[in-house]
Each structure stands twice: as C-alpha cells, then as structure tokens.
Image (tube, rainbow, N blue to C red):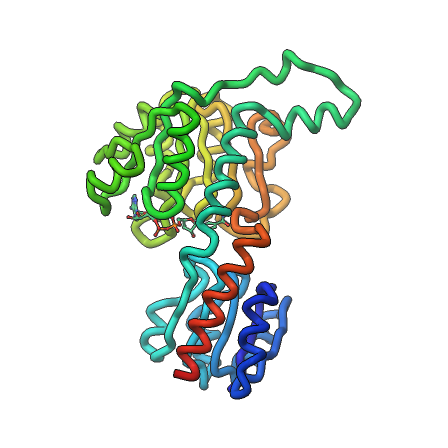
Length: 309
Ligand code: NAD
C-alpha cells in the first residue's frame, strides 16, 4: 500500500511507517496542485500537516484513499464532509503539540506586553531607547481565554501562576472544568471582552467560530486590551484588528496564524505604522522538536493501524 507524505513530518513518524513491510512510503513535499492531484491517485494513505489542501477535488482524485493522518490538531485543511462521504478515515494527533502551542502563546503574550521584539529591533539598529519601550505587567491584569480546551486550559494555568485573573468564554465546558483551570466561566462574549486586558483565542476554526471576533465583537473590547491569536486564522477579522490597533482600541496584537497563509506582503497587520504594536510569527506555535516528534508518532501509528488493522 502506498502512503503519501505531502508535508514535512518528523522522521520519528515517517520512520515508523517505513518499518511496516506492507507500506511503501513516498515523501513528496512542495507539490503544485497538479502534482498533488496526480500523486494522490494511487495513494492508500496520506500523512500531512496543515500545508496540504485536501478539498473535495483532491479527495475525489484519490480513488484508493482509505485514511488521512494529520500530524497536528487542526483538520480545517481537510474537507471532512467529502472525506466521510467517501469513507476516508481522518485521523489527527490532538495532544502532541498542546504544550508547544501553550508556550508559544505565553511567549507572544510576554513579548507583546514587554515589547521584546520591537526593543531588539531597535537595539540591533544601534539605538538605546529605554523609555520608548515602556511595558505592562501581566500580574493583576485580567485574561480572557476564548476556548478553554487543551491549550486554553494550559494557558489559563500558566497565567494564574503569573498572577493574572483568568476568565473564560467556552459554551461547551462545565463550570467544574473552568474551576480546575482557575478560570471564571462567562457566558456572554461581548461582556467578557469588555472586562479583559488580554484576550487569547484557543478555539478550532469551524463554521460557528469563523470571524468569532469580527468588527462588532472587537468593538466590545476593553479600551487598550491586547489580543493574541495562536489558534487559527479566520477566527478574527484581521483588517478590523489592524484598525483597532491603529485607533488605540487595542494596545497591541500578536498573531501566529492568519486567514490565508503564507501572509501576503500587503497584509493589514504588516502595515509599517503598526510595527511598534504588532508581533507576527509564521505559524510556528507547534514548532518544537518535542511536539513535532510527538504528533508525527501519534499520527503515523494511528495511520498504520487504520491501514493494516
Ligand atoms: P481543543 O479541542 O482541546 O479546545 C478547543 C475548545 O474550544 C473546546 O473547549 C471547545 O469547547 C471550545 N469551543 C468550540 N467552539 C467554541 C465557540 N464557538 N466559542 C468558544 N469556545 C468554543 O483544542 P486545542 O488542542 O486546545 O487547540 C485549540 C486551537 O489551537 C485549534 O484551533 C488548533 O488548531 C490551534 N493550534 C494551533 C497551533 C499553532 O501552531 N499555532 C498548534 C496547535 C493547535
């Protein structure tokens, strides 16, 4: 059986598949759309990350495909309805990168309020401008976690340790679960936004959560709040965030994920006048050796089990 690997996946996982004598592993990354349509035609299984669009056309071209494994959490690059119509099993590895994404969120939050990258930029230009980089202390401030799942919970616990007051908006969890994360569960998003000094998103991208923070929702934010998005592009109206930072409604924003990746050169958050208040990273939340190895091993072993029984 052919297993096609179309994104860069840790050798820890690919190696597991190579050891199976009934599987022939073909690693082909950086494919054009036409090459992808051709490569999937005889694949029995696929191992991917978020870079391969498995939409209805690609799944339709994959005549033999029985299982797709995503080395990571988000499966928004896969047309799930089309996969299930075709009887294709979709596997993800939701636990492997929780801590990596959590730690990246903390890094973004701290960099944002202490202007670490902006100060380093300035120093690297030969400047020494201490008063320009006045920061805000996290301790004593109120955090709003939107989506108190695996990553949201770990972020909440760490922010409690930083002395923050933590609230959460997540209609699908119990008060007991929020209590265990040290978070006060609020059921009105606009009300929750109006209280928070720091807002961090940890929901999946679904039809319901797309543009969860659209322009009207952003207007409900407390004046001067900071916004962090290390979950998924598409959850936020990025244009409205840029405008919010420009107008002073938001003190700053830190994004690891974007609606359309890679980010285009004229992206609203890349505007020159926002450079002092915005930090962007290229979707590296899960990029630690530990997380990549963990998600690859989980995805590959479940893929092998699905194909070989
Ligand atoms: P999870 O499934 O454990 O948690 C998601 C939480 O969101 C759940 O508690 C769910 O109840 C809640 N939720 C769903 N719909 C909601 C809504 N409309 N409003 C409020 N809450 C809602 O997921 P996770 O493992 O914590 O991952 C969270 C996000 O982080 C996902 O989008 C994932 O793709 C993303 N992620 C990004 C990176 C990265 O590289 N930046 C790495 C890992 C995960």
